[in-house]
Length: 264
Length: 257
Ligand SMILES: Nc1ncnc2c1ncn2[C@@H]1O[C@H](COP(=O)(O)OP(=O)(O)OP(=O)(O)O)[C@@H](O)[C@H]1O
Ligand SMILES: [Mg+2]
Image (cartoon, rainbow over all chains, first blue to last red; front, side, top):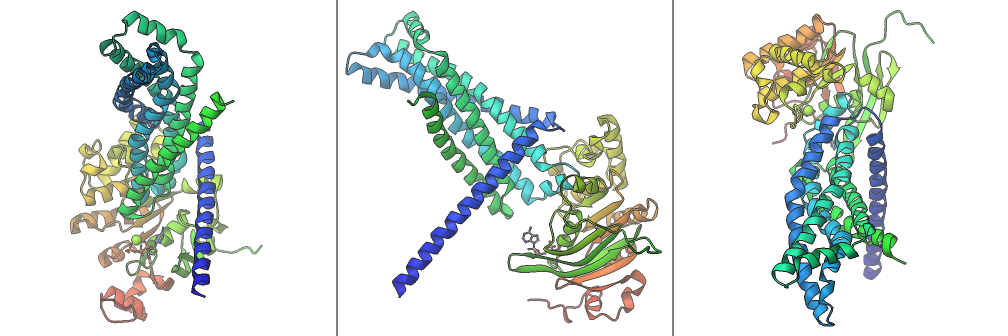
C-alpha cells in the first residue's frame, strides 16, 4: 500500500513537473514572438536601443577580448603538443584559426557575455517588476515589452556578431603570439598559413552563431526578469535562472547550428 | 435601451471579485464615483485597496464582476481599446514606481514626451514639480538620489503631468511631513475642484480624508462596508467605519496581535 502511495506521488510529481515545463515553454514562445514583433512595429525607442548597444556591446569588449586572447594562446600550445605526436606541428596556425572562428570564439564569447549581460538584464527588469515600474509603464501608455524587451533583443542580436568578430581576431593573435614567441614559428609563415587555410564560411558560420547566442542572451535575461517573483528573492532567482538557462541554451543551440552548417 | 435622465457615473464597479490563489482579496466590491468627484477609499492594511485601483486601470483582471467607465463595460478591455482608455488615466503608485534609469524630469514628462518636443516637456515637468513643492534643481537628479517623500511627490507630479481626466492616488501623503502633506491635500482638492478631474484616493490619514473626499468608501473583508458622502462619515452608524476613524483596537475589525 505504501509503495503504491509513493509511486502515485512520484508519478504525480513527474506529471506536474512536465506540465510546468510545457506551460513554461509555451509562455516563453509567446513572450519571444510578441517581443520580436515589437522590434518591427513603431514606435521605436532609439535612445533605449543606443543605451543597450553600448551596454551589451561596447562594455563587453574587454571580457570577450581577454577570453579570446587566452583561448587562442592555449589552443596553439595544445595543437602543437597534439600535432607533435604525428609530426604535424605545422597545422597549428590553421587549426587555431578554424577552432577560434567556428567554435571557441562564438561559444566562449557567448557564454561570457551570458554571464555578464543576462544577469544584469534579468536583475534590472526583475527589479522594475518588483517595484511596479513595469506597471507604471503600462499606465503611461507604453508597452513594456516594446520599451524594455525589443531594444535589448535587437541590441544583443546585433552586438554579439561584432563582438565575436573582434574576438576572432584577438584569438588568432593569441595563437600567433604563442606560435612565434614560444613555438619558434616564423612570423610571415604563421600569418600566411592562417590566411591560406581559413575559409569565409568558417568566419560567417561563427558570426551567425553569435547572432543567435545574442538573441538567446537577451531573451533569457528579459524573460526571467519580466516574470520574476515578488521581493528581493524573486530578483535573485530571476538572475540565476537567466544565466543558467542562457548558458545551456547557447550550448544546445551551438550543437544544432554546427550540425546544420557542417554535419553531413 | 432605457434613456436615463442622469448621465452614468464616471466609474462604477459592480460585484467585482479577485482572488490570488487561495487568498480571496476582493469578494464583492460595488461602488460608484460620480463625474468630477473625489472618492477616498479607507480600510485596513492588506484589504485590497490597491488591488481595487489596479482592477479599474486594467493592471489586474478581475475574476468576475463588471467595471464601467461612463457606462461602458471596460472590465476586459485589451489592446488598442485599453490603450485609448489609459490615455485618460493617471496613477500614483504606493511605492512611487519611478523609472530608475531616467532623470526626474523625464519621469515626470514621460507621457508628455510622447507628443511634445523635449524642451516643452521639460518646462511642463518643472512646473509640475513646483506644484508638488519641489525646486527645479531636482529635475536633473535621478530617483535613487531623492528621499522617500520626494520620490512620492515626483510620482504625484508624473501622475498629473498630462492632466488626465481620472486620477488615482495610492497613499499620496504617506511618508510626508504634516506641512507637505497639507500642500499635497490642497493640490489634490484643486485638481478635482478646479480642473474637474475625477479622483480615487487611498489613504490611512484621517486628516487627508477630510480634506480630499467628497465621498468615502470603507473596504473590509473584500466588501465595501460603507459608502457615503464625507458629511455622513462621523455619524455613519457603521461599526467598521466607527472603529476605523477613531483608531480603536477593539471592534468588528480584528487587530491580530
Ligand atoms: N500581484 C499579486 N499577487 C498575489 N497577491 C497579491 C498581488 N497583489 C496583491 N496581492 C495580495 O492582495 C492583498 C491585498 O493587497 P493590496 O496591496 O491591495 O492591499 P492594500 O489594501 O492596498 O494594503 P496597504 O494599505 O497595506 O497598501 C494582499 O494580501 C496581497 O498580498
Ligand atoms: Mg496598498
